[in-house]
Image (cartoon, rainbow, N blue to C red):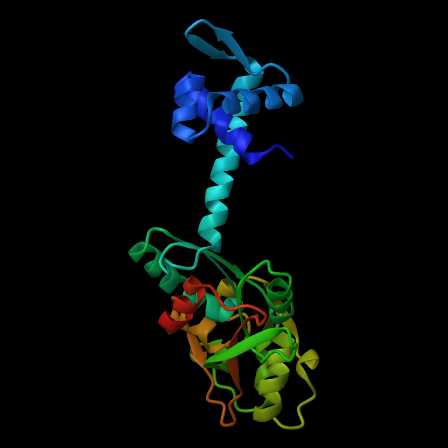
Length: 284
């Protein structure tokens, strides 16, 4: 690896066009500046053409100067990411379930508009992928529907999210035969959610797999489209239903025994959250 001081010396020489002025800027002797440049040229080949009162970069020198700039920018980015002084600038990485993520995303954008130096990287994923992403440090902050029991993860309660049975508008559900007539619109977590809710609403039912499946989508924002068109019913979290634009085309069935999940923030417990992530939790 090249000595970082040599890179700073070469950059100064190239920008100022003079060993003397470079030595003055860097607080080094002119001999030290010359030694640094010679050491680089021993490694990389000729970088400068030396003429009386003029220095010119070789093609290799031009390429190397660009490399020095990239290293300097990377160093600045690293220092910015390690610095925790400013909670309104830098990157926050967040992974959430799709349902609550749909509700949170506009608020995240509002936050970015207020603080233009803030960068929010947000991904939708199911619980197992969220936990893996946080454990592997791909994302700093996660939101899950079950409190993590991994000792490496810290957690904090966020809010509650009920499950809802949603049918086309004007459709009544009184017994299991009504669901059989409607058919089911499935999604990645659909059968597990439906099993939990329907077991409360229709005790002893033959199970969600006994119902005809009239459609499937893995896009949480599209689950209610076929329901609104009368193609079936579904079970999904309340936040996903609330952001659906055509509320007049759907109906939420009154379930006398609701199923309510608690949502938990989670992050690696071995080190504190960044000021940006902590502020995000506080604001949300």
